[in-house]
Image (cartoon, rainbow, N blue to C red; front, side, top):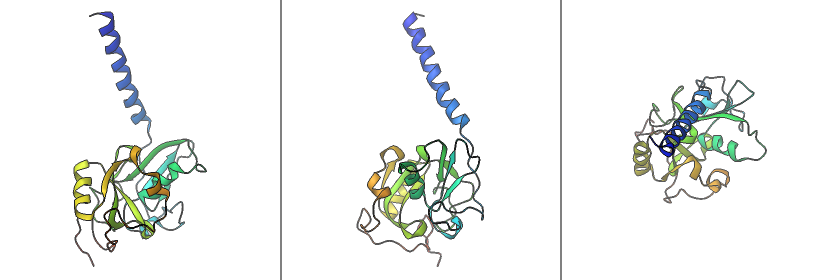
Amino acid sequence: MTRTRLAATLLAALLVSGCEDKQASMPAPYALTAEAMGRYCGMDVLEHAGPKGQVILEQIPEPIWFSSARDTIAFTMLPEEPKDIAAIYVSDMGKAPSWEKPGAENFIDARTAFYVIGSSLRGGMGVQEAVPFSSQIDADAFAAKHGGRAVRFADMPRDYILGSDAEPTADGAPAAPVNQDVKGQDHG
C-alpha cells in the first residue's frame, strides 16, 4: 500500500469513527409523559395534536419539551435560547398512531429528519407545522396527501419557523381539522 493510500484509509476510518462517537454520545430521547410541559405555551404537551419535540442540553439531564416540532426547531434558531444542545428529538410521524396521538417513544434525531412544511394539517397550538419523518418516502407520501414539500433540518426556511402564521399553506389550501390521523382518515 502506498503512503497516500494508507493515509487516505486512516483518515476515512477516523472520520467514520468520529461520526459514530458523536451519535453514541448523544443522550437517548425521553418518553413523552403526562408531566411534559411545553417550553413556550406552559401547557401539557399531550393536550395538543401533531408532532412533539424535546431538546436535551449538555448540563441539564432532563428534556425541554415542545408542543410542536416547529417550536423545537425555533428553539435552536432563537439567539436568547441556550446553545449547549446535546440532542434534539422530534416525533417520527411515519410511526405515529395518529395525528392526535403522535406516540410516546417514536422520537428521532431532528437533524436527520425529513420535514413537510406548508401542509394543510396544523400542529400544537393550531399553527403551521414542520411535520417530521425518518423516511423521505413517508414525508413525500404525506406531502402528496396533505400538501406542502419536504425539506431537511439544515434547509429549513427560517421565516417558516420564526415567521407569522398568517400566510396560507404552501399550496394555498385551508388548514385541515386536527381530528385527522397522519394517513388522512377522519376520527371525528
